[in-house]
Image (cartoon, rainbow, N blue to C red):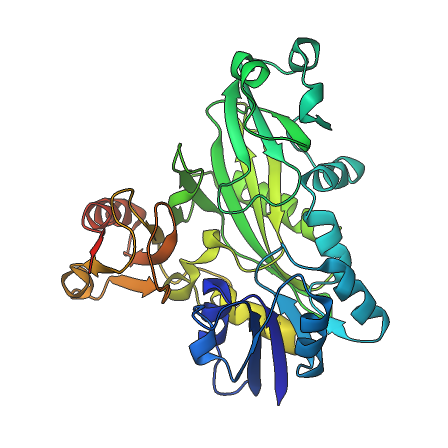
Length: 379
């Protein structure tokens, strides 16, 4: 029996636990602040504690054979110490040290000749007209270097707005705005023996206000050559991290068909949720295989699949329910995953729906119809 310790008890931890399959002898210990978290009811052991506390992380480590995480904003220094003491941690803490700070992450791309949008690092007080003039166009992307999550910590502003009313303080990342870019993701798994699996490219669409992904599907509407190149860039990024794990690589495909890496997430990711029904081996099962040293599964698509995020609307807070769930799922081509979150609030991720279809054309038509029927209402 392998005991997997997960730092964080959100929906990613929950879906990882749900992906357990009979031939893999694994149990789960979860660390999270509140027992109301999605993963707690299905964990074999739950530890109430802080993701930033070295003491609580050590308690989790003592109950586990291998440690991982489902959110980046945790105590990486504690993980570094535990690794030096011989604890197996996947991905390695060095990955988190690179990923936690968006500035260090961009420098990592630069150092390894990984194509990425032009950028500059500075303090928010140091933004000047001269600095902004180094970036093309009228818009600029500004990100907090640490702490951003689920669309928070990112702003797309005009240069005039950035000079007049910057929404962030402290150390920030300035980045070129990429106009008319197609946003693509690839999920990459690296096994403990170094073998790898790369999922088909995923085409993504984001909410312009919340910066959350709203809708995605795979296969992406790109040529076979671009598909191969995007998968190669994604694999190159992850291999440079020198660690086993499951990673989501988010990329821009520019107007000139250039491939620029945006960010890496060192864990299961929203962009891979469609793989639960859409692929032979879901991203969550693949993650378990990596953690337990099992052979990697088949990442290929069973058939075209889409994912629609279910988020809290602006006009509902507190107790909630999804309207029409029975009707939505009655034909067997729509699968609803709710995350067991106790309350809704605006833009909170509450669940997702996967849609499958035999062709991409049929998928997009069906997914559009489903999008218009997904509704969170007060309970």
